[in-house]
Image (cartoon, rainbow, N blue to C red):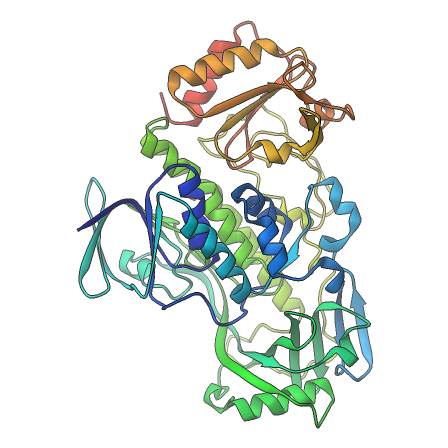
Length: 539
């Protein structure tokens, strides 16, 4: 029987990222995937800024960008009667705007899933103590008080302390656990087509991530992959009664020509994959020692591109908590905060994806009928402008020590974001200098807890190091501008983090703030011990 700390089921972007994160934290894992290799379909493509921050921490950001397209190649979102026909609307998503640089040091990326997964797989396979096994399907699992016994492949058994189920919306693990879904199981049907065709005569002068085609008898989307001759193509808004078997490669090629407006277009169909859109969230993200992540936890329509991103952020939240319990510097109940933090956010994101679909006329009536001919129905203003949602995971759980402050008020919480170091929020990006090199605060986070104190906060720094050492917690501490080699050259850090020169902020490994003190304390050591014990279930 194989033995490991964590069994990961599913080798999509979520499972592969979980393997990387656990390996970087020194936690042994085994990832099993029923398919023989990574995805052969593009599926998801948009990687938002918050996810790219995580990939940056994992050391894969540069390779992901190299595998995808630069942002200037996908500047717009376009609606048209056909690629050769009248353009109906053109937008530039907020995610692409230069002013978003105030929120993060990096930008979003467009990398099709079949290009992304091999990149992430290479990094996962290069790291120890993780291991990957393709062509190995989970058959069954049993739980007891100490762990999980899973059966995979041809009867081989694996013993693990925990399991991460990243096996998708129709994966087996959630079914074995008996965890139900809430929400709408059917929104519309769609056909995902992968093709080769040179569309540059009608796209190169207006590079877009999406070209929505609106015709009385056809609603479809061209999805940019390499921007030249490799494209995704979606046949949208099909009703429940649609005969999906009728979408043969020949018929799909004809629909591509119709949507392009080029009757003699040379088209090679590489793959056809029908699927059904839904908006559902698991009633709980944990069943004993099993944690649901990604589409296994929240199945959302692709309008907005949140599915892959939310899943990667799920395991980013979970991995460090498992590591804390595994290595003994956190109590067993720390992992309880995963459901408390991620399920409300999963519900909120799924609701926004559903709202996007509804505004675009894609949601079927209760009887399953859906009118595919609704020209003029495009998208609400929030569509692809959801900066507030991308950075808006504000946690309220036992792994956060509140400071009594409220979130800033914004005109629209979907589109607007004010970076804030309120406990539970993502720690704001501020440019600093470390030993003469320009870095972001984001670059300080990832492997352990980080205490950032003001220039007069040496008592916080020294006490934090002593307390963390006594508790065995991975920990770094800096005085920003106080002689530790981390300098606030722009003078922006105290205001961004809401502290005085003698205040301090404690940031978790997932870059969310655990605690904040605006000023000094009479006994900083006792205060930080209280905070760490509370956050890590070390009472």
